[in-house]
Each structure stands twice: as C-alpha cells, then as structure tokens.
Length: 110
Image (cartoon, rainbow, N blue to C red):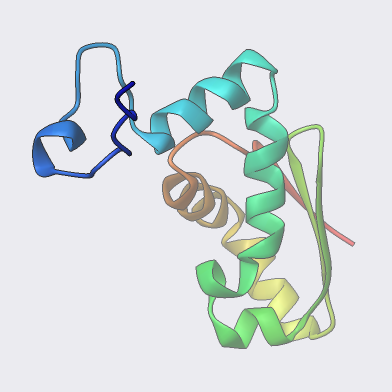
C-alpha cells in the first residue's frame, strides 16, 4: 500500500481562487455582521488619540472616551482647551477623516 505524500508548498498552490477574500475584508465583514464596527472605531480612536492629535495635545489630555457618538475629552491645560473649543468643527473633521468614517458627531470638553 502506497503512503500518501505530505503536502509540499509550491507557488501554484498559493494562488487565490474565486471566493477568497483578504483578511482585512474578512475582519470588516465580521465586525459589520456582529454590529461591532462602531465600538471598534471608538476604541481605535481612544487608543490612537496621541498619534492623531500629536504629542502636544496628547500630553495634556487627562481622559478621553466616546459615548453616543460624542467624544468626551478632559484637557489639563486651560489655553489648550480653549483652542480646541474654538476649533471644535475642525477637530471633528480631522478625527472622522483619519478614521475613514463618521465616528463622532460632537465633542464635549469636561
């Protein structure tokens, strides 16, 4: 009786076939199917706040969280807070553009 040959990788076996999808697309479909995309975006925003806004703003941010599409930010510097209050719409646009979708509708300073 002949032994089965072990699987041997070659480039021909690695080609995509119809019906396959990328990992990025598969994760996106999973998040949409289980309605987790919004919470994922909110968590991403909280985690990458420093990268989005820069070191100057991130170092003066005491607390940040998202509830009901409102970004709540606690800023320890009064002048920085006033600048961000004045630039509220620009801040919303920058965040939503960086996220690739409308994640927040308003910003609340606490």
